[in-house]
Length: 407
Image (cartoon, rainbow, N blue to C red; front, side):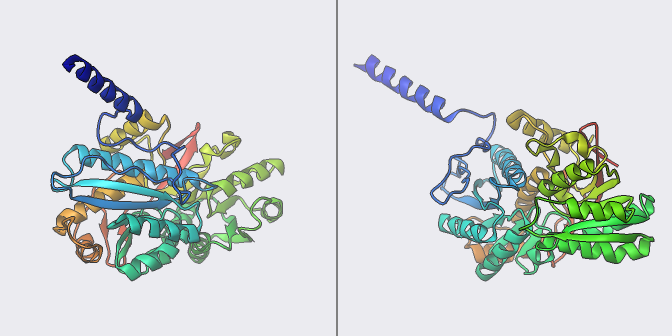
């Protein structure tokens, strides 16, 4: 009888291990084909190693893991999970483990708010998100009402951090436009520039307006400024033709990689070969399905991270990401990875404990954020203003031989 029971226990344990899989550390990072929840989102399974007393820090995440901007959300989800796994494996935050629950918003503001409410019902105490600007602005309205701490890895629009509970890891839209114009001018990349921008997206409009203002100081003539909207983002023949006809030596593209891939294809179709310059939304263009990646060769864009850096922290992260997902991480993965460690630093600096309610936790974290200095994979000595804006150095990346290289 004892032998039979032992055999049954061994079989049960074997079946459990086979069903769950195993990792070297922490919980399993999400795969791209996650099981869908009832709300249609990619919910990340929480860590399974809570503190002895059951206390955990419950961190929510929101971003597009399906749809046209999914390369961003998937990267953020994966980068955040790697950081969570590392922290939990090292003993947690002051001995307390982290649970991460990531929800899909399909780059849609309404769905992002729905995801936020789902996370509130789950018991979220801190939010990393949303990933893209319009959804982030919508969610910021809700987190402000709840006084819940929000740190966006990549929401660049000014309004993403308009309230005192919200901070960002990335550059703001005006900063990207300003630095882009400065770089183009300082390096004499072009004197005649055409701009294509998304007039329906605060992200794109904010960058363009700052670029246009600084271009005057850099002796850059904007010879064409052509808009598109969310309802007209599949045909760029007119915009490209106007840039070409006006003799633009450089095409500035302050928008996302999906549309950028179409613009580059249209330029090839019209035998138009200017220099191409974009912003952080370009990161991910090499992963666009059915896109000829050679068209992006020599494209320049702003980014806070380059995967082939010699920095040891970067090397460690890139190695883990490649081992788990068989691809090179983009800046969104890096921003999210740093976000989790920034939350850890703020929790420690603010003496935050998991038994505090979300509002009290938020008050402590808001105060702590302006006191910390953070060394991560997207920058060293990063600090934050009470406005939510980070102080960090910009980086220009160029695609060379099919990979991003820091200039």
